[in-house]
Each structure stands twice: as structure tokens, then as C-alpha cells.
Image 1: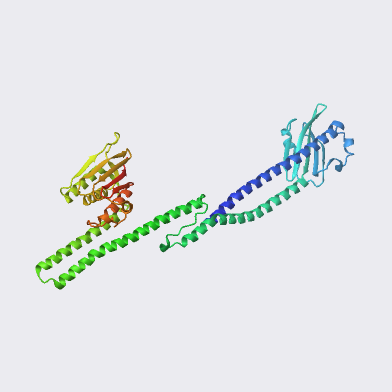
Image 2 (image 1 turned 60 degrees about the vertical axis):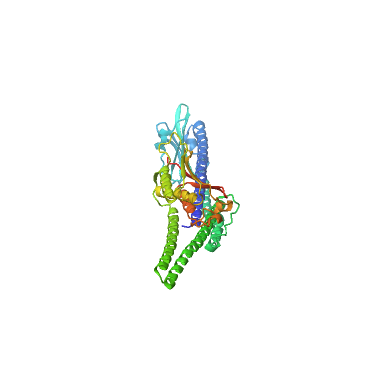
Amino acid sequence: MLVRHKLILRFMLLVVAIQLCLTAFVYYYSARARNERFYHRLDTRARQTASLLIHRLNLDPQVLRQFRKQDLLTMHNGRISIYDARGRQLFHIQQDSLPVPIRDREHLGEITRERQARFRVGLIETLGMMTRHRGQTYYVFMAGRDYYGGREFETLRLILIVGNLGALVLIALAGWLFAVQSLRPLARMVTEVEGIEATRLSRRVAEGNGRDEIAQLAITFNRVLGRLEQSFESQKNFLAHASHELRTPLANLLVTLETCAAYDATLPEARRSVHSAIEETQSIIELTNGLLALAKAEDSSFSRTQVALDECVVQAIAACSAKYPGRNIRLEVGSWPEAAEDLFAVRGNAQLLTTAVLNLLDNACKYSVADVQVTLGYASPEQLHLTVADRGIGMAAPDVLRVREPLYRADNGRATPGYGLGLAITDAIVRLHGGQLRIESALDQGTSITLELPAAV
């Protein structure tokens, strides 16, 4: 079901429920008011009849015979009955058209001087009361049909039915207008989004007043678009750099093999060509492995276990020392919280974390001939930090901002063999582990890179 239809349905159900509650309230209290009004009329007529027939005329049969029905009965289907304390009927008069049975004696026991009997048989409503005269107890019953009150109540009922049906139509129309007006910004947003294509990611959705929920949705969507545009741009640059980096060694390999096939006539010349082809092939393999490592580093589906970060650092130092023999790599362990049970423990993948640290050490050793300083410690009880600092060639400020991009290399480091994938891989691994990478560098002064990770709890 469309959201528009859901809004219309919910709006109608809510307003109709309120309308029905109001109708029930009006109907109930109107019926109660009619009932009280008519019984008050019956009570007044019963007291007047008791005062006249019992207290003044003593129920004298000769006098009572002189009364006509229209003198005493002034209501539709009216009836007057008087009984003594033993339930004997002393007086009775009714209109000939009275259509219901008389059940006065069934209610004699309910009547006291303080309490009256009220009951209804069909459309005839009856009130019974007690009065005393000269030590005798009498029961007076006054009955009648509230003809005009009933007609008024029927009119009210018809008004409520017709009014509710008409209100239902108006509610449906109001619900439709409400849904259309409420969803109009979303419809406009959908139209704007449909116009955004892969080649037009720079377009943005109108953010309205910038305060309500729809504006917040537009702002969030624009942020997603910004990140998507940045990701597309990074992917575009990555593909451009990757194709360029792969094209050069592949072209060199092809030229070497063609030269060997066409011109190398002696074994030494052929060996030199084969050796050159092997070097180019190794370069291609290293670049391909780096690209695969970057793709793996960006895969968040790996399993996470508790890892000792200090062991990963020691393994990375050992591997880097073997690659750069004679290079001095100093490890310094900082302070740690007294309450820590497993020192330097993080949640993640040991192989990926070792690769991240090894990339930092490899860069430090590659671009610096001086000692490399490694510091491992706690920034807080909840956060670990690992700093790798060198005194090498450093980087300029613009290069520091872009050095995390895949295949990007600073201008002063292009003469050194490499492909610009190490920091990109490390940054991806650190972000997958919920951490961040901070880089500080200055030209000809060295570089300090700090890896921050949440400690395992």
C-alpha cells in the first residue's frame, strides 16, 4: 500500500473515531435529558393527581365519575392508576388506545416515600410514587408516551446519521488533501532524485526550510550523495592510476620480450632480457598484490576475535627488520591502566592488523635512513595508540591530505620504488576496526603516524 493511502486511511480512522465518540456523547446525553424531562413531567402530573383525587376528594366514587378522561389525561396514551397498600386497584383511567399491558403490581415493592418506580413497556413510560392520607398508604401510577420528545429524538438521530455520513465524505476529502500536502515535498524530492545520474552526482536535493523532518531527510540524502560522489571520484582516480601503473610495467615487459625475440642472438644478451622481464613481472605482481590487499582491507565481513596488538607489532618489526637489515627499529611501551586484564587487546583480525603496522614500518624505513621509533601505549583506558615516527624526507601539507588515497604518491617520494598503496591499505584496515589514522609530517623533518584503536572490553 502506498504511503499516501496509508496516511489517508489512518487520518480517516482517527477523525471518524473522534466523530463517533462525539456522536455517541451527544446521543447518550440527549437521550438521558429527554428521559429525565419526561419523567419529571410524569412526576408532576402524578403529584397533582394525588393531591386532587386523594387528598381533596378522598377518592369519592360519585365525584370521580363526574371527571372525563380529557380532564385528567393530557398525554398521549395516558393512564392513571391508584392502589391501596394491599395492591387493590382503587382508581383506573386510561385512553382507549393504550396498546400495552399494565404491570403496576410488579413494581409495588420497589416504591417507598423516598424512591419512585420507573419502568417502560413498549413506548409507554410509567412512574409510580407513594403518598399517605389519613394514615393510609396509596400508590399512584402515571403513564404516557413522550410523543413530541420521541419525534424530536428521531429528528436528532436522523441529523446525526446524515451528519456523520456527510462528515465521512468531508473527512475522506480532507484526508486526501492532507496526504497530498504532506507528501508533496517527498514527491518533489523523488523527482529531483530521479534526475540524478551517475554522471551528475554533483546535483543536490532542495533542503526546504532546513528544520523539519523532510528537510533533515534531504540533508541526510545530500550527505550520502556527497560521500557517493567522493567515492565515485576516488574510484575513478583509482582506476586511472591503477591502469597507468600497470600499463608502464606491462609495456616495458612487452618491449623487453619483443627485443629479446628480434635482436638477442647470444645467450648473455638473452639472459639480460629475461632478467629485465622478470623484474617487470615482479613489479606487476607486487602492484596486483597491493590492489588485492586493498580490496581485502575494505571488506568488512572478516571474523573478529580478541587480538594482542603488541604481538602484531613485534611480528611486523621482525618482518621489516628482515627486509631492511641493519636498520634500527626501537620499540617503546608506554603506560597502561591498572584495571586492564588483557594488555593491548583489541577486537579484530590479527593478520590485517599486522599488515597495517608492517605498512607503516615499511614506509618509515623506505623514506628514512635514520632510526625508526615505535611507541605503543594507552591514550585512555578505552583507547590504544601506536605511533611510528621517522626522520626522513617528510611530506608537504597538501600531500598529507591526499596520501591516504590509493596510488597517490607525494612528489618528493616518486623516485623511491613503490605504488602508493601502503597507507591506503592501512587506513582502510584501521577504519574497519573502528579506529582512525592521524598523520603529521613536515618536509625534510620526518613523518609521525599514529594508529588509534578501541581497546577490547
